[in-house]
Image (cartoon, rainbow, N blue to C red; front, side, top):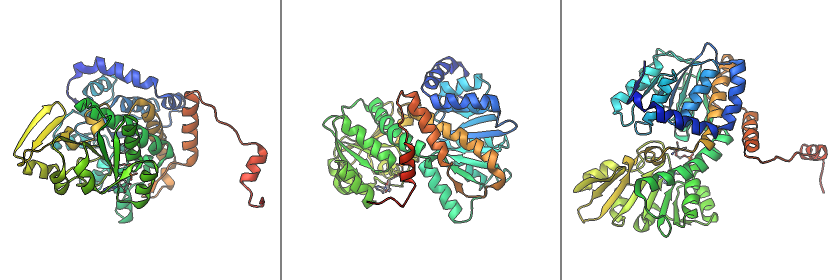
Amino acid sequence: MSDITDPALAAGGHLRLEWAYRRMPVLQNLRERLITDKPLEGHTVAACLHVTAETANLMEVLRDGGAEVSLCASNPLSTQDDIAAALVERGIPVFARRGEDTDTYYEHLNAVLDTNPSVTMDDGADLVTLLHTSRLDITPLGSTEETTTGVIRLKAMAAEGELRIPVVAVNDSATKHLFDNKHGTGQSAIDGVLRATNILIAGRTVVVIGYGDCGQGVAQRADGLGARVIVVEVDPIRALSAAMDGFEVRTGDQAAEVGDLFITVTGDIHVLREQHFAAMKDGAILANAGHFDVELDLAHLREASVAQRRIREELEEFELPDGRRIIVISEGRLVNLSAAEGHPADVMDMSFANQAMAAEWIIDHHAELEPRVYRLPEHVDRDVASIKLASMGFDLDQLTSEQSEYLSSWRHGT
Ligand code: NAI
């Protein structure tokens, strides 16, 4: 059983899946072990992830490890219908249609939960939220979480004593957030903006709101394309690092007056709202790369505008009573996944190797786990980084025994 847009799209999906797989050497390496050891044998994995070529490769690797897998989308606009079709043709149930409405989105989440999974995989904690609301009938051994916003939600549940299963915060692995969030979002968010608008970034004022891992990547890439970059932050340490990385740091109100392109990456709500829209220049372009579509207060923009039209495939133009036009990309949903293809396989390689190892870790350790948020052991990060580095043709130096001894001793002084 599956629910996808069009099975006939499979041929293109197979090609994209294969193209992505070539650039996922860590996942390839892991697959060899999983095929032999079958550590997931007898287990069911229900995944709620963006339905992309990279995710499809993860699903196949999990299946090669012995798991029964099924997949639904973690965002209604990020599904690549050709990939969904290819996966179904490869025998993996998929419940995802690009552009699905909210009811269908939740029907699809429930469909993967109906497989009574031993492990759930989330990107934004939507499955886990259902497991704590309407699907108390299901208790997996544990869950994994891909993104910052999901981890924040899960830690809040744990702090309130509400979490009822152990969760591995894959996002907290260094080989996930330092690369996927920074380099993946940095490149693919700009890619989304370019595909949606085809504007020239050089010479524009780009306002990046939120200077976490994702925002740092976006600011760097915009800078590299010749933009004047302004960063808006609420955390003094992040703001200071933006300043010392060479960016202007301003308040949202100040930036609103001068920005040509605004990209929100905070994981927060209504980061751009009425007071900012009121100050923006005619033609200002807004995009969001944070997890949920709540960073731009679009309800207000809709209400305040006198006219609204779709000006390009992923662009909605809002005309305000004074004639200024504000342009929103992909309805304020993750710009890199809605207007482009998401992160390149090269970084998802590490994120998804961590995901597969997190599923295996839950299965191996569930007996001793408590209902709280865990990180994968540090050696997993080191292994993932070493394999990736070697695949890129780089070599790691080694400590001499004298250096190892020196670095682990407190007796050495001047
Ligand atoms: P982070 O926690 O490292 O950074 C977020 C930053 O936003 C923090 O420095 C915080 O101080 C700042 N912030 C919060 N509220 C703000 C406000 N009102 N104004 C200005 N700054 C504010 O988080 P990270 O990892 O950078 O992730 C950000 C968002 O992007 C999350 O929702 C995450 O789930 C999502 N994400 C999206 C990806 C994508 O593919 N587009 C990939 C990875 C993460």
